[in-house]
Figure 1 (tube, rainbow, N blue to C red):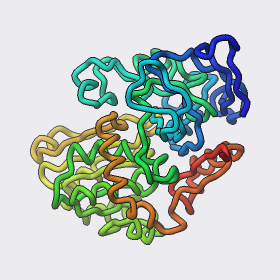
Figure 2: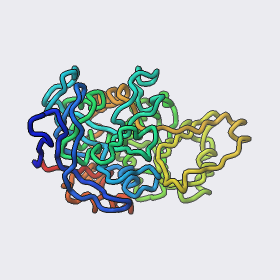
Figure 3: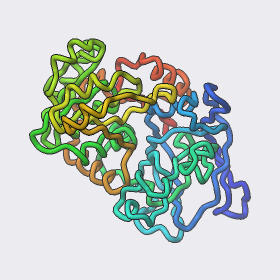
Figure 4: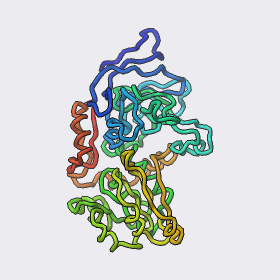
Length: 376
């Protein structure tokens, strides 16, 4: 591994390692030297082994959320092994397996941070590889070194999430971001006996089905592709409707669901979803469209008279992350028994650009997640 200290006499000084870096909007990721910041007493240093490939990384590469700074070392579903700890680190040890998610840091002192919900930090959390264009979410300007596409990482102990023993990386990586994103909604809204719909069947929806069922819900998958029916039922869905491209078919599901979790990265007419909700039902959006399609219209009148709710959610904090991973360990067979053609596919890092293009073009029909590996 190509690693050296920028100052050989100072083990805590800036560290030169390698990572895959995007130099500009829409450009390919290239393996090159990057410099990590100096160690802090509260930091851990991590040898990275795997990283799940999330559609967010594609959005950030293409700058279609207007949030990207370049050069950019992306990736935020990483798993690695702690190799050094700062002097003030209390809860992690050398050799621990940890996961690195979308949140790199937070204020740690607001009401939300104090209960482990740093994803809604009142002062704005720090995006793992966010820079100035992320505004309050890019205060550290970590875009050039901060992501999990790096061979080595340094960051706050609090945000290196210990992975329970027995959870393999092909299960852990997709949960670090995608799993946390839907788990947040499920914790907030799902109650036993609810009829929950998960819209747009891909990586997020796969884990949403599993966790919603763990919380006692009856789960229906909504998709625009009938070929996904067998996969959806195989991962645990109770029902499936390939209706999302047919507004008339969606109308047949009026007043059916207590909660709809919309995982789609594309925009469609929100009223089609709202009409499928029961009285007081909740539409929760977790998929983020490109910035030119992020505006929707809906009338107050039906919202008021049905007491329905439109909600959004972003990743999860350290408290719920720990709960989610423990629940995963307790129900591990539910994650290991997915059909062979709908499991994470482990690929070498030199295929990163091919896999990102496949993900963007929705060509990944035989896997719900690509898992990039340094081959260790």
